[in-house]
Image 1: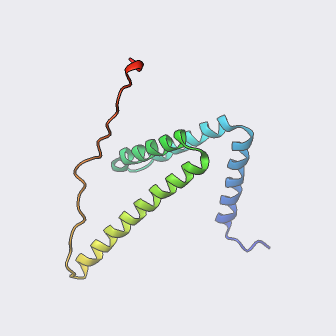
Image 2: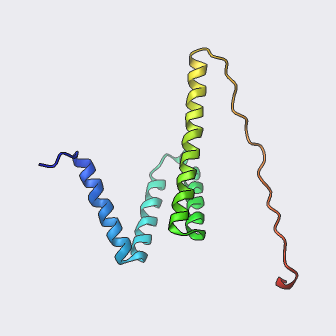
Amino acid sequence: MNSEPEHMTSFQDKASDWAQLARQDPQAFETMRTELLNEFIQNSPANLQRKLQGMQWKIELVRQRSSPVEALAEITGMMWQSTQQLGKKQQDLLDVCTGKEFTPSPVRESAQILNFQLKANSL
């Protein structure tokens, strides 16, 4: 008798199927992955779709410029940063609800500007 919940077995089966597809037909894997992600974003609440599209765009850039291991590390870092920000917001809410002094997190008002130099021989 299998002691794992049914949904976990189903997840493991699906993960195994995805891994097999990635090994056997990487192009089909990428096509299905993209379709599934797009479907998820389209079925998300309208007010979240733009943010989800932006997050997916960032993830795709990381995947294109990195090795799989480097991409995994960077994307995991992005996830943890987001989780930490959510935890801070939760703590702020708890502080307000319990009457503790509340100091809002600073809002980042500017972006880092990158200076790209053109090489003389590239013109």
